[in-house]
Length: 133
Image (cartoon, rainbow, N blue to C red; front, side, top):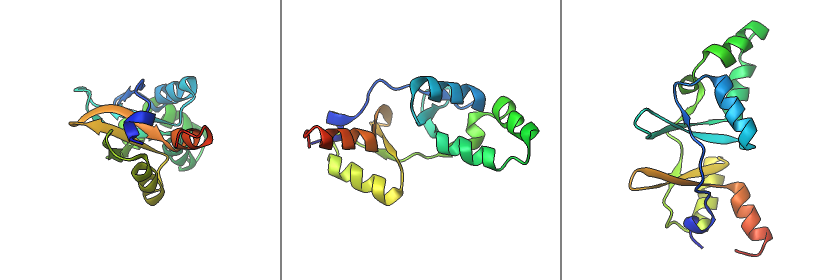
């Protein structure tokens, strides 16, 4: 089975210059844990995840610093740069292996340098649980 068979193609993205608070709203409303971050040319430059936000918040000394993090810090400052990617033609087993080795929950799917989808650990588990794999 190929990555293209399981990947999600209806992606939400965020711009790198929005606030962390805006990204958190998008994460919460979409019930997702990670969003691709794009620049003004719509090229993927990173990923903002709930883990990134929690790590940044944990470094804040008090409530005032946390408020500043959410209201005045842009996504580009806390995102993970250079997210891990995979081809839509790659085997799902290869995707699972990369996620384990890289200790990531998702791989963004690019074809010809263009973001075309995302495959997550949940997608693979769902496919195994429903006997698709």
